[in-house]
Amino acid sequence: MDPELDALEEKLAQLVQRLETLRDENRELRQQVATRTDESSRLGEKLSAAKSRIEALLKQIPETET
Image (cartoon, rainbow, N blue to C red; front, side):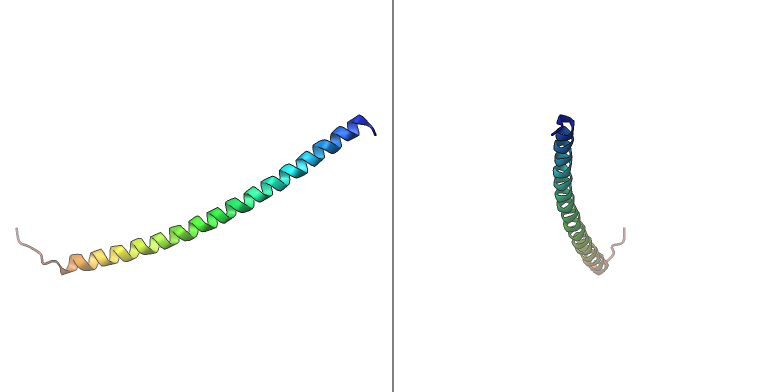
């Protein structure tokens, strides 16, 4: 077969392999982003709940005159 055609076929095979690798990496990164987004949401909810509890506790503290 023509050496130029062989070289082109090899480069195409490398390109296809790289594409598959990048797709796998992209899928993994999307999963990581989804996990981090869920975690961030949960932490935001916990922070909001803690803020509410602290505000409620502060309202129970009697004010002192200075």
